[in-house]
Every structure is written in C-alpha cells, then in structure tokens.
Image (cartoon, rainbow, N blue to C red; front, side):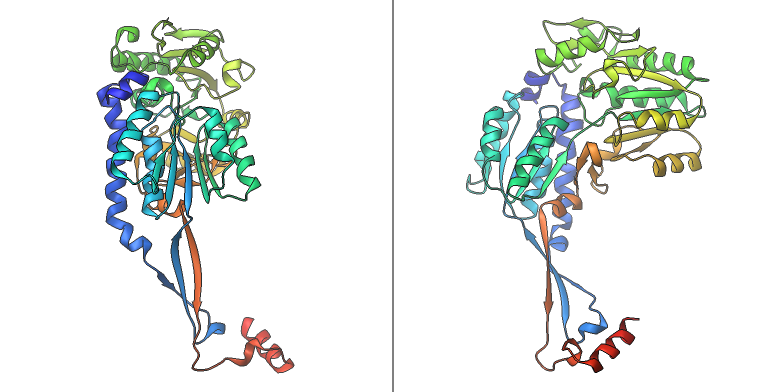
Length: 411
C-alpha cells in the first residue's frame, strides 16, 4: 500500500478495494474450481464415430508475456498472472515503469516466491518492452492504450502469437429521464473519480436527458463533495495524476466547454479536482480521445436515438452504463449498443465479479479474462478422439454404396 501511495497517492481504502481485495477474491475462486477446470473432459461423440470416445484436454500455451499498465499497477499485473499460473504457463511480467515503487515491490515479492525460470519480472521502459516483443512467446497479454495495443498486435502477428488486448475507449453513462437521480449521481461520481478518473472503465462522458439535466448536475456536484470534500486538493486520500505529461494533457481538456464544477489544480503535486464540463459537443478535444482523468463532460439529449448516434462517434466502448427504471428499455440498449461490458444503474462494479468475463470488443480490445475466463485465456484446449481397435466402421472408406448410406445418415 505504501508503494501505491508513493506512486499515485492512493489511499489505503482505494488500494485495498480496487487492487488487493479483488485479487484475494480471484485467487479464492480459481483455487476452488481449478481441479475441475484442468481435468480432461469427456464430450459426446456423433453416431458417425461409433466406437470412439471424445475428450478435451486443457493445456498451457507455454511461455506468456504480460505487459501491465500503471493505473492499477497491482491488480492489472497480478490478475492476468493468476490466470496464467492457474493454466500452467511460465510468465514474464513487465510492470509499468510509470509506477516504479509498485514495480519494485512486485519484483521483490515474485522473486521471493517463484523460481525465475517459472515466473520472472522484467522492468524497464518502452525499449525493454520492444526488446521483449522481439522474442518468441506463446501468448501475449497486454493492458493499455489503443495506439500501443496496435503495436503489440502487429508484433504478435509476425510470429502468429495469440494475444489478449485490454484497451479502453470512451465509455458512456446515460441518465434517462426516469432514473433514480440520487443513486445515479453518487454511483457515477464514484465510478468516474475513483483513482482520479484514471480507470479504463470509468464513465468518460455523460448523456443526461434534458428534462432532468439541471437537477441531476446539482446532485452530481453534491455527490462529489460528499465523496471528496469541498476542497479535493487538500484531501490527502484523493489520488494524484501519474505524471506531468498526463497532468498537462488533462489541463488542456479543461478549456473545453464551460466548467460547471471543479477545475482547480495543483501542478506541484499533480492534483486535478473532480471537474464537470457542460456546453460540450463532439467537436471538442475532450471528446476526441479517452480522457483518463477526473474530467467529466456532459451532453444532453431528447431521444435515445441521439445517444446511439453519439456513441458511434467513438464506437465499441469498453464499458457502458445506463440508468433507468425501465427494464425493457435497458434490455433494448444492451442489445443495440456494441460495448465490452457494463452495468444497469451502476458503474464499474461488473469488473469485480469472477463470474463475469471482462474485456473489450472492436476498438476496446480483444479477448477477456477474470475467473474461469482467465484460465480459458491462457489455455489451449486440445481435442482428442480415442478410437477403438476392436472393429472398424467401413463407412469412411470410399465406395458408391457407402456414399448413398452417408447421404441418408447426414440428412
């Protein structure tokens, strides 16, 4: 926890609830089920294969490379590592150089527990990542930005290496006119501003129905004050921005639209207060890339068709959040919008369940993990048919008689 505080000023509560506690649950879930998952599984055999038995064997890919990000440097390094180990792989783990204290602790812990021939931590900057990608791996797991994800995919393609890409995108939160505004405001504020907005599934922008927009914004402002105090810059538990480059980028975004709330900053300590922007359009800079910080642009709508068209400006978000009391309308939105995963009447909580796969689609990533899905990601399922030698079915062998019989059988 001290390393996380040094790198990002994460509070003990955030460190445990968003990094460490999730890992405990993941480990417990996988340990409980691993024996069942890893055993050869007998499956049905068709009539045409009479005399044989069919099995699926779970086999590790071999040596996996895991490249972890800086925003949740413990959880997003160790969660895929747990799955890779469970599946029986050897692993090279590359933590982010942008959170050096946490990277050093991870290396110290892993070296103390595992033989480096089995699990090894390799630290360094992008040149080290490039050198690793030039090696041959049996699987690559990357969490990070879309531009870097494209580079990873290109390098993997050279050696036909299977990959998982956990990327991001602009994840919308939609507040419909019938939503519970108090809960919507508090849950969006929590999901957006935890870790100072440096979360790949944080609500990146809000669409709020214009009939409730004014009331909702006041409730959102109140929720932020409740969670982070009147002056977040003096809140010692409020997470800081990771570095100067990210801070400068975020400050640039605050010039878009109108600052409805927040906007205060402390450059010396890399702190940016939770900020709500209004009078925003898709032409603004803040709407042209993932924000990855504590800035929340808000747009209004009359019809949900406007929302669907807006989302198409930055399609396939990693997450999608819809607030409404109308179950049929919620189902309709789930079915009509392409996104990785999400919540109805909540934010972020879906990724903390080991029963749900976590991953993107299209621009937001390839593949998924968590729980059984982590085991599956790092596993090659080998199909085996065990044939009898007690007799030989003649239908497989070419003859006009067998052809007529096969046509009847397969019809």
